Length: 63
Image 1 (cartoon, rainbow, N blue to C red):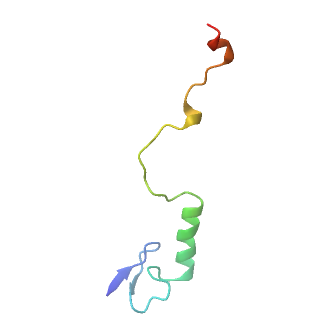
Image 2: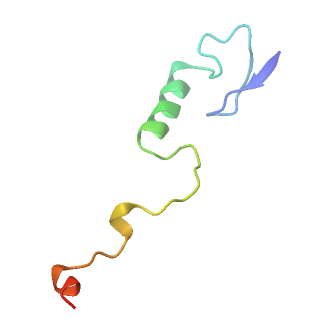
Image 3: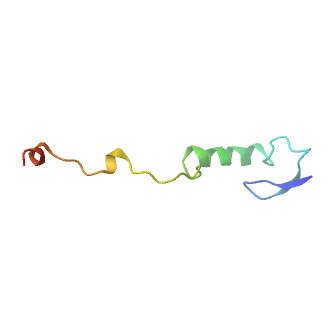
């Protein structure tokens, strides 16, 4: 079965690929680096962070 490397798009035989699904150790490490630097990620539904909500100061509580 012929596949394309997800990093460089080079075609290779699945059975012969030592770094499946990548064509080389370099492409495997490039992909890992993209995940580690958050250039790639798993999409999620956006949820408001606790830090993004407006905070009330103690002066606001006195009113």
